[in-house]
Length: 245
View (tube, rainbow, N blue to C red):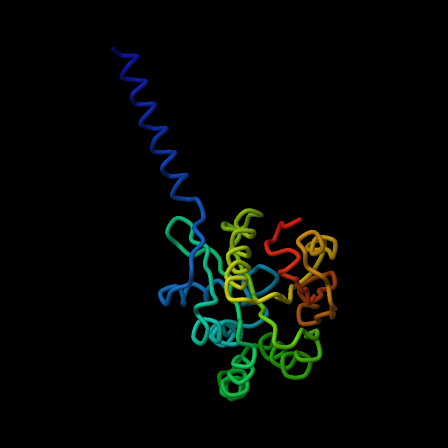
């Protein structure tokens, strides 16, 4: 009887552990408005080569506005999130309307620049943030490589706890399937490459062609090696999913 009781306790403990692991399995789903703040927070928490942007630029609000506002506010239907244990641990935000985004950037970008200039002189920002702003104004466009015109694109960010090859694949494949269902045949991304991460051979393995790259200098004082921004493009007719042969 005692042994049976121990077996029952063990089975119950195993069941609890199994349920906990099940709860921790990533769920990939479409974006909804309640995810907006989580996306903005993750954007800032991963903005400096996968780490928090704060040492480089202290204004998280403006940083998230520049990088996520169009996608969450103007084209939320093209965004996906990775949910882990009931919390958003990563996202993929996409754009299928490049002309709309260009118009948005021209209008809303002007508003953001006005805020940026005002805070630069009156907030006041710390020296590191002011240096980042000077880089943004004088070098940001020059250090952004050309991209295909009128082509969908995406940005992906994951917190360390949510990062895994499987999660990344499922998140990107969800967006690629979404593009194919809407009749698109091509997509591009602009990916930060540094150290031993994301070599060109890796992009080729996933069916992406490297179009060009530019060295990015905004992290020069914070990171010992060179940092590049690569433009990579994928032909969805040849390889519709990330791991397609």
